[in-house]
Length: 120
Image (cartoon, rainbow, N blue to C red):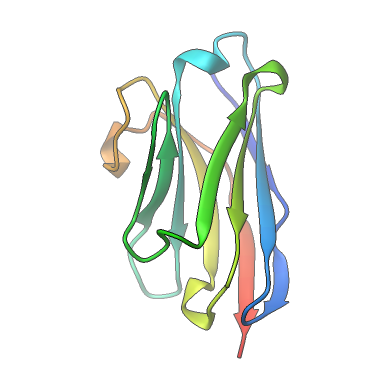
C-alpha cells in the first residue's frame, strides 16, 4: 500500500513558476514509476509527466515542466515553469508498478490532488 500526499499548488500569474511535491509512504518507493496527471474543470484527467529510470512528458508541457524524484525521502517533484492559463487544473500524483507509462489505468495509487491556478 502506498499513500501519496501532494503539496505546492497555488495561484500564480502567467509566466510564473511553481514546484509541486508528492510525499509517498512505504519502503519500496524506488520500485514505482511515479507520474503526474492533471484534470481541468469539465475535462478528463490527462497525463503530464512520469519518471522511473527515465522521464517522459506530455507534448503540452515538454520544455516547461521537469519531473524528478528523491528516493531517499520518498518524494517526487514537478517543477513547472513558464506557466500558462491552460495549465490550470488539479494536479495528481500517482504510483505505478508498471514500467514508465502514460496510461492512467496503469497507475495503482493516487493522491488527493493539489489545485494550480494560472491567471492571465
